[in-house]
Image 1 (cartoon, rainbow, N blue to C red):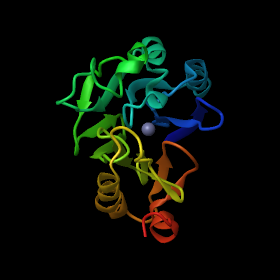
Image 2: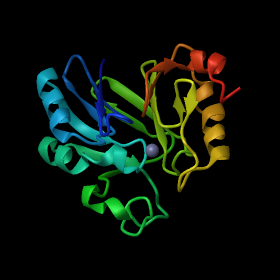
Image 3: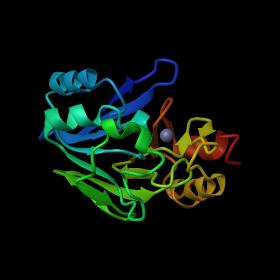
Image 4: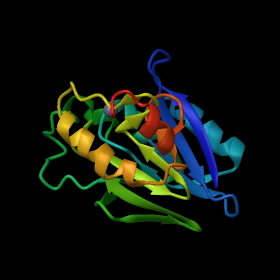
Length: 203
Ligand SMILES: [Zn+2]
């Protein structure tokens, strides 16, 4: 499996955009195309990877700012968590940023699987940083927006909820094996075991 990390957006607080692909077929997905679509497109080209899917970990604009351009240029499907109760047009998190947004082609639910060739990722609903937060687990790695190296996802924002965040961490992420590599939405990668032992905010 290929995992390429691209830091996009504001240099002071970049978002990790991940390109995840099969090494065999060079087909894969883009997680969190937050900004800099030209950089994302160039990386795909350089790595000779075809993106079949774009997934966001949650609906904050720093995770979908490049969605429109990247979707148009790749023709990939767009998948996001199923927020059946919200109207995308009036939603407080999306309304200021609708010019960057597109309605998802596929709505994900907890327990769904994302399958691209030999890649299989489970969708874990992990709210707390955002009500629609998801983590993607498979092949010994997890992409997430609730756990970071020595940190946790921010909750002092609209839609954030500390109790939900700790539930997501304790009941979903910390049930994964210790050697699971954590690819957070912001900051450096870590492992579940390292955070279980050292993260001062989840002890
Ligand atoms: Zn966010």
